[in-house]
Image: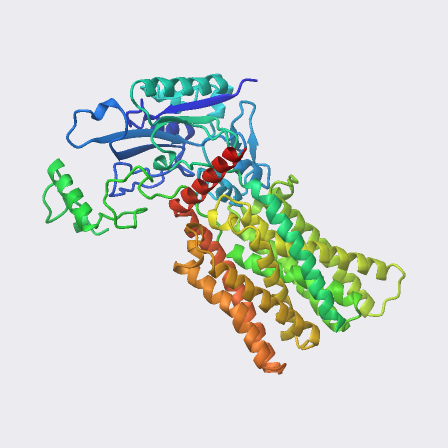
Length: 257
Length: 351
């Protein structure tokens, strides 16, 4: 079975938010408040239970690249459509105690709404801060990778709506190569700070939603070295075991007197 | 934000590119910023390349007041089962063993009730027992609580039957089994909550993952013996356990106070920091000092027990609040991860 993936390219995105709208429309995601942030052009702010695509508006001092060459005040606009990363090793999936979160046949991570009981453990287990509990519904929601559309042979709504092909949908290995090729092309054109965001070297083990970005991941609120929280289990349980043995010893001593 | 503060609002010049430029210049020279949700620090409104408008990277825990209270009650119930088992083994006062078993048994009702009421869909609580996942501390916790419930009931029922004078060759081994299983699952119940929050993406929790299980177990120990003292068991055993728990909590309090990375900021500052500090002082040094200075007088022991209980309860809330503060701080995430990246690079060079 081929593994599906997104490659979202910040150097092509024009910030039109068609992906946000298409996602909301197709998936019938409810309104999550009309809030003006008052500090940026980004009034969506972040992904959440009712925001599965989020277009970021970055205002940066000039970076590398030819577009600022003859400007008085070097400055650059960057847009990037953020989405659930569908991790190779997903923290939410590992954490889910009901089995509501599963790995699908296309390699994506899916929350089954008919099983989720809203315990909230996936929320604190996602290293990307994607999945969240929806109020007042009570269950956890995130991007489904349009599993319904994919099952019917269609591409996800966001990729379909993207007018610039900044959001590319395709086969994981192919897009991984396409991302590297795109970065090489950008660098040859002078964008020396272009890079692929796909945390392959951490315990997350790469993602099914990769990004081509300019500059550091931190500026996009993408964690520079995300880890799946299960890597902390061994040391935590070891501590629990040692402390439990010590506690039994203390109680035994107390009753000897 | 009041309407008059909005650029271009009443009494302000109309919004224009010039006006926006002047707001930005003003902000970068005075350090004042048009504040809004998410942006709290006074920096120029044009962000640098280091963060995204200081918005959080992670989602804060959604757990409500029931969960920290459950950590507290579960710890006490779990360690009570341990005290009952060991007490029975060492032929302690049967009345004290009985009360300890009752505390554990009452816990088996309170704990699930608290957890279920925290669920977004409480009627689906049985879905917790749909799967068994070693790699999910929440799944393990559900099964631990399930096992503890059965064991605590068996131990209590058989112990009551023995105390009522019912003679049966089956009762003593069943009682032993119930108490043993209760102690085993009780130890897990009192400690796994530390693993539960330690194995998450929240920086302040996972950076303290080794400390948390020990911290929570100690709270359970001190809390359980404090409640036994309130039931009138002012025996040497509860005094020793009270001393031990308060001493360990004092040590843990010092360890927490000495940590000064960005990640540990919520342990020192704000609502979580001050609650943590006050709670830690209550269950640590104050409980210890009261116990020493009262020289075993009943009032002194009650006071020490009360200090410990209040401190232990408040510190559970402080840990959840610290998790929230940590999730809201993108710099905590970046800093801890850049440290990890640097360490990985150093390891590569060493190879």
